[in-house]
Length: 323
Image 1 (tube, rainbow, N blue to C red):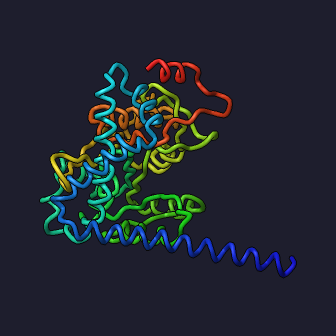
Image 2 (cartoon, rainbow, N blue to C red):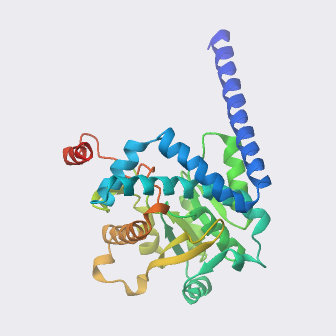
Image 3 (tube, helix red, strand yellow):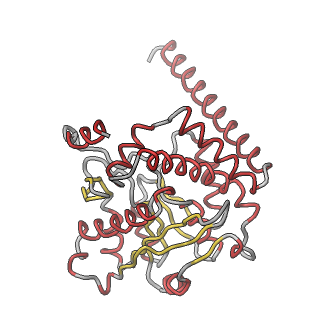
């Protein structure tokens, strides 16, 4: 490789590092500002920013509308706009809660912020010698759900994609690991995952992430969605009970309820859940039920439904145009 070519690549690398660090500093600055603002004010801040994103900028409005039309058919335009607005408010408020949680939520006062609908179920699985697979969706404040597990003395193992920005990646993982979570990279962690399951640890995973063309395609709110096969395999191969959970916001900032959408025990699996496809369909139905029951807290801006190459649905397009 010639010297000018090496110099050019070195400059490009330096510019990328500088850009990544600038973004990291901006995010840190925003977090510092949020931490200065009293938590009681964060809801009003979230409403104002949500109004800008939803009504002025109209960010990703076509995607949100398409998702809502399919998942919640028959609503009025005003209802769709209100759900979209509330989604943005909850999403922004989630960031505010994450910024405040390390300073406010501790092992001695977590009951002020969290309620658990069925504590016996939680304790039963935490005390079980077997591993546990907790599956959640992009719903409510799923990040603080994992944070709470660590506070309760049951650290979890979470598989997450490594961010392109290494400074942001370290910053976000520092928060996640503060209460005892362990973050495993999405690629190359199979041995670590097997070891964690073999030693009876708890895995927390998002079940509504797009898995690409080679994923297993199941129905999710009436449309085919690609899912990772690994979630079902963790339960079927390790004997780990699977629990669908949600960390749902109730009546204000940092007022969250832990709900259980469903539980399956591999020692007592019905025949229809003894396959990867059957179990994957089961937890997708549970996540969908949570989202449809409280649609304001689901991430409709999330690109959950992506068609296979060459499989764009004309029916989907017609319904969106007609609406």
